[in-house]
Image (cartoon, rainbow, N blue to C red):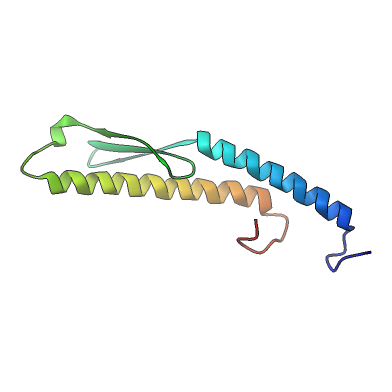
Length: 109
């Protein structure tokens, strides 16, 4: 029996299995990827993995001012946000490389 996509169901299943294996490998690679963001002239650095999970925060002691904790908090949030955005871009690039030629609707895999 042929499907509407014009491919043999066994071929489609094999292609899907290969794609799922590639996606699993890509997810593992993203977990091992480290993305860094530095703000405030380098006084606060955030490192996330390729999925956006926080790995570390580095704060230069020169920016620690007990009278201006809000500035430090803002720098931390900014560094983390920027690092997560970079991780999202890396994720999108990795997934595009896997699914780009398949003509699948976004979000299917």
